[in-house]
Length: 117
Image (cartoon, rainbow, N blue to C red; front, side, top):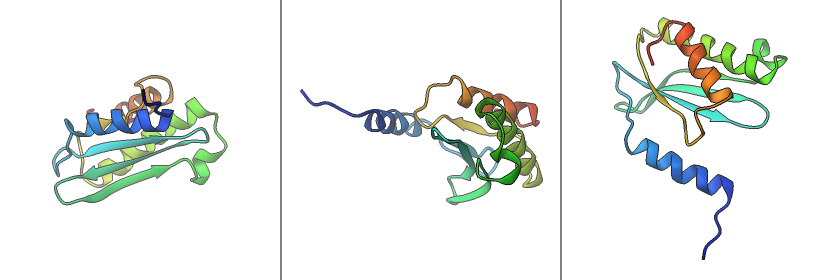
């Protein structure tokens, strides 16, 4: 019997999710990374392999916020940057994390920002 660690389990879930989700130029993928200290996300066009917009918890206007507020605000900030890049809708890649708590707050922040997820 093999024992897998939590990060290894998350990577297995992440690969399973990524096998089904791809981002295009019209509808890019929102990739989320969540750590104990904060949340980061990118808007990725998988066809060309480039990042259209990104947001990280280390930015000055997100740094002092509480975790749930930080997630929602970073979602709104990413939506604002996506609109500037000409994106109206996107595919949400939860990255192996449960759609709950900060990941859910981030997704709702993106939706409040005007991006269809």
